[in-house]
Amino acid sequence: MKIITILTLKTNYIWVIYNQLNECIIVDPGEFVQVLKILNKLKLILKAILLTHNHHDHINGIYELIKHFPNVQIYGPIDILNTGTKLVTVSDKDEFFLLNKKVMVIGLPGHTLNHIGFYYNSWLFTGDTLFSAGCGKVQTGLIRHMYQSFLKIQCFPENTELYPGHEYTLSNLNFALSILPEDPEIVKYNKKITTLHRRQQRIFAPMTLALELKINLFFRCNNNNKNLKYALNCFPKTGKEWKIFRNLRNKKDLYP
Image (cartoon, rainbow, N blue to C red; front, side, top):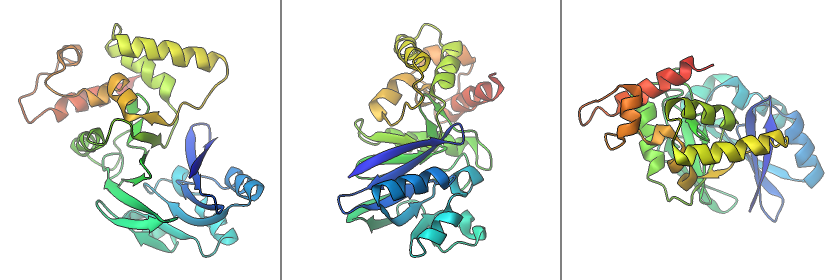
């Protein structure tokens, strides 16, 4: 089982998963041109599409893909029903099989109310919930839900590979350094990514959960992290740690 990375629409990731039989799954096809080029080049047969949420930059490619593969099965959250596609609606804890492997649906609300992720072959597709060194904007969901989604992701094995919906690594690291400028793990990784960026590398995913636990401040929003609490001037009572997450996300929203 292999994965092809497509970086398109400036920052969007599309993931193409395929097996030895040339059968494939596509995650969040925000456009179709590059996808069809790869499918045709490798002679891949599209069996299924996985959608994490209903935003256009994650679903716009499905309409053309359906024309080329009319039998493709589409899986996604309930709020994609109004797109006019034939959709199998899935939600947290649902399970099904694709290409002879189990797909586990993980509820990851926050960016949108019904946002989901997919755990497949030890890979976690996080959509716009988690990005490298950052998290998605809270749009139609709630900040407490986003915080809980991060707690849920944190429970996966640390060797889990994370496949986000967008590439914002360098910007997220720069923001993290604006909060904790002397954090050794973030300083080290920022130096690495900055060097690669200067060499014109633009793809920095997938990443492991182990790495994100070191560099992603949104995983540190608990009462054990004194440096972050002081940086945000936020000292919530036990059980209200989501307020640290809220303050951090608010600062990210204002970051240039």
